Amino acid sequence: MITNELQLEWQKIQLEVEDKFLSALQIAADETTENDASAAQFTAILTVAADLTNEMKHTDQYYSKANSTRSNKYPLIIQSCCYSWASLSRFLQLIGGLDGNHLFSLSIQQLLDLIAWSRDYRAASENIHPTLFFHSKKPNLADLPLLFIAFEGGGADTKIAIDIDSQGIFHAFQWVSIMIWEVHRLAQDELLIRTRQEADLWLNKVYSKSQDIHQINNGTLVTNLCEDVFSLATLHIKTLRQHLVDANATNELNIMVVCIVLNRLRNAQIKARIISNQQTKTQKDTLEICCAAANDYYRMSQRVEDLQNDVLSTTKLSKALVGVLQEACDELVNTYVTASIYAVSMASRWVMEPIEGELSQQLFRREWEQILTHNELALTLTTTLADFLSDMEDFLCDEFLVQKFLVALTKAVPIFYLKCLLQISEEHKTRMTSKHSFFHNVPLALKRIKDDIAILKRFFYERRVPALRRICDREFEVLVTILELAQSCHAGSESSLRDFTIILYKQLKDFNLTRFVIGDLWHIIRPTLEKRAMQIVEGLRPRLKKIEIEVENKTANDCMILDLQYRHSLIAMYDNFKRKRPIR
Image (cartoon, rainbow, N blue to C red):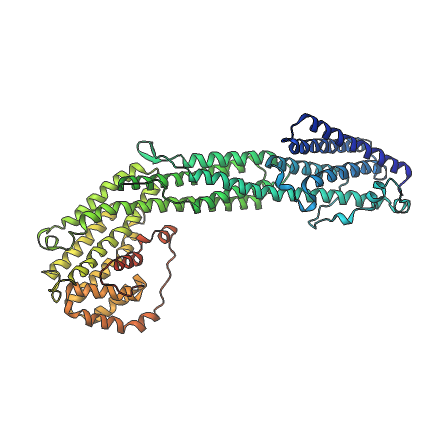
């Protein structure tokens, strides 16, 4: 039973605690300006609450040394209940009740302090009464324990006071502890939301800032993007973790905060323009921007690994939390590496631009066919590619990026060559002589094409990059099929036309595009049979539609850079032809 002595003890403690809070608040009000009043009020309440928690610890240590029984610890639990209830009441007023309506007014630092105090309180209360439990069910102020109802009324309701026994004391202590842990949850949720907002804010500023390109390490092109992003990210994470690391805890909140920052880094990178917003006037400028971007993103992927190692080496984590951190870091690394591959692949576009301007009007013309007997134009193309490759080896920070640049070229070069060939059909259709082959010597022209393809492929074979030969063979397959179709056209073989039409359809994955490419190829070589070839292809439509086209598992940069896809590039070419056809 609750005796009058204990009731008087409660009232005495209550008056002392209230006096401490009021005195602290009065001092804070006297020593601060109106603008700092809310921050001073929070600090005053937090300071008193922390002092009360420490006093709970000291009292508990006294009882532990005296080997007191549970019944003899009632005064300690009464004291703890009073301290806890007084602290809880003040914090609930400060944050706007259990809905946390005023949490938005607290700074991140104040949220961290509130979380730290509630954790310290939980450790102290569990030591006082080890059977306390902190369940996930949200508490309700309507369930205010009888102990608080009776004592808050100064003992006016004697009937209620008499009904409170040892179980009632424990229930009150349990309830107020759960309430304080609910405040912890509210503060934690607000901290996570605020962490996301703060990260988005400074990342937006960094990514919107114009970055100047400069050279390091014998020519490597970079900007300060990597340093700007990760200096802020590291500082942000370090500041938060200093308040959240607990050597005796599992550090869930610590890892949640780190993962939120990592997620916002990933989100910012996905949203960011891969190429800088700088105004560029020359092909060289754009190429350098691509290289600098590729280097920045690749270096950022390495910084993620450094950050992960730092967290793992300084924080005690469970196996599950290590897995969560690993997954978040892997996703961010993958995002940065994908962005670096995209940027370096974009560089191939600007490498091909001057080549197209120089060679597109020379390939497949009379001089190419009859005078340049050693495939000089193909050799010129490979020489130019070699010069650009030498520059890229200086510009790029890692051999990995150079290899990805070569992979992009294996896609860009055959697409360029095929477009140059098909564009001839557009010119040929405007001539009165369109009933004759565009080439004066078709077998010789086909030999030139075959040798050109061999020279271009040999350029990539000689790079001695792992798997590049296989990639090159795959990317040149369309050109090889086009050559087979051209030979079928010259030979007048309808069976070969049918066979290679099916192969080309599987490669281009578009019936109309396949039909138009074959029609143009026949118009270049044997215009009089173009109509017949189109009829044969059209007759294959039902069969082609039934063919199961395997969906390739493309890499991210393949999907993003449409210029490196046959289908997109050819459709764009046909859109620019004078004769409009239903290609889409």
